[in-house]
Length: 118
Image (cartoon, rainbow, N blue to C red; front, side):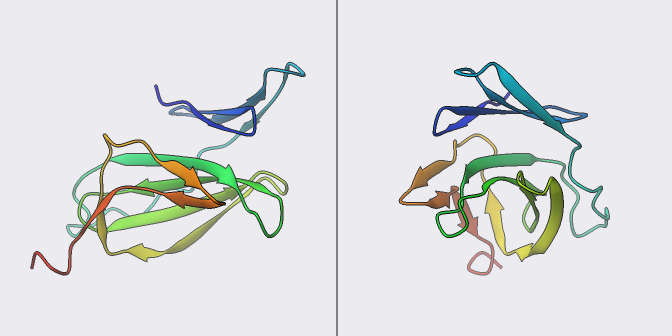
């Protein structure tokens, strides 16, 4: 199981929900998983990588979900409004084994440029 932290909050992605906990207040909120993404021959893998951080402009905490092998689909959950939105395809092979890092308000996720490999 993956757990991600930001500002003392803990995000725990699961197969049927995503839970965000505040250990200091013992409060937690549960959110539904991202929308099912269309499965095609262009996206044969089912790797899922998560990131968790705070939007420095709006102050909202967000969960980023990347799915796929080669070309990744991206969903973003805004915890303030509790809604997912789908972001355009990411042309990178995202590493499911590397941890994401929050640096100066930007979520950094390790990836490999697909356009240089083809």
